Length: 239
Image 1 (cartoon, rainbow, N blue to C red):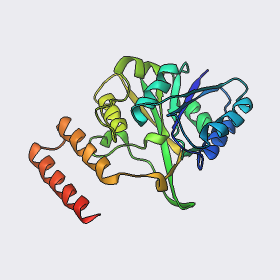
Image 2 (tube, one colour):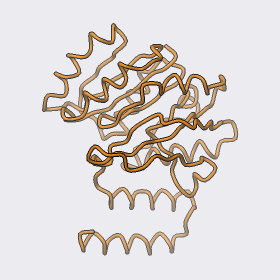
Image 3 (cartoon, rainbow, N blue to C red):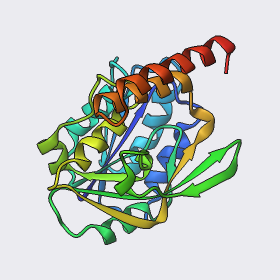
Image 4 (cartoon, helix red, strand yellow):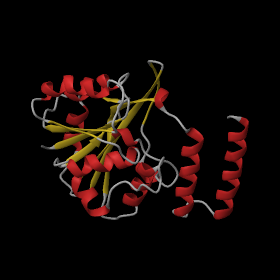
């Protein structure tokens, strides 16, 4: 298969059907679909099994406990056989021509990240559409739900680090950005839709990113301590 698409999920019965449909309805059919479930206790697996025959043998499913979302992503990457790997979370969904647009942009470089525009949705309404340039990765993360990474890139430079439970995707992209062999390619089309209502643990994620930025020497130890202190105050105040 040209693409390996990965969805990780846990108790996602309210949203995963839309995610499944968005993959099933792709205009490009040259893909395998890998679902990594964290041993859901709701109706998630029943929905997945109902859709499985529609993928005509192109779906792989595992359901077992994991050590968080990035551990589940790494499991999916380990099962992937496609040339390009995309990750769409269980409360997000692709545009119908996402894979087609990425295929058109990919020029065959072994170590490539193709990324596009992301639509953010809250309560069923469009909040924003944006793309962030990879050349400013040290200031801000590009839209991970719109990223497609070659399998050879994962094989060469590693998977997602479990050291950063909330920001391993950012650490992964920073790692690639510092490798001269890796090429970033922009696609100026909406590829994915991100459900902002599903975002949680905002303060913990912010503190995790602060630690990452300190580790990569993007901020000083003094700035790290100051921002961590401010985040603790925010948590105490319930912000």
